[in-house]
Image (cartoon, rainbow, N blue to C red; front, side, top):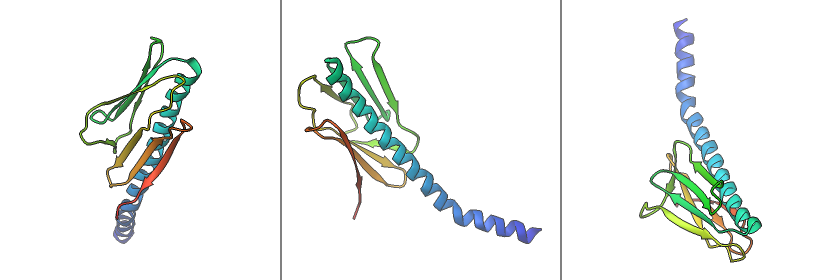
Length: 137
């Protein structure tokens, strides 16, 4: 019985780093998809409703929010634990999406606990977000 428990403990100990890395990867993919969908929704709101939308990116709180003149429209996105918005300096950024105007070039860089990085960029030509993986050398 002790041998079986030792073998199970060894298997769990060896597989824990891989499991942890896998969960970190899933969190990063989920967070980048959420940020891309959030930015896309803000651009669509500005274009379809013909109203200015303010997007606030707050790296300190790992939080994104979108506001417009319509008091009923407020959207917020809190990033999951272990995923941070990387910015230097970590001050909140305010972007205004104006209907009929070109979408500003916006990039949100996300960082995981294990050092994984992804960038969500708004394409100024199409207004559609693109996700890029960042490789460090």
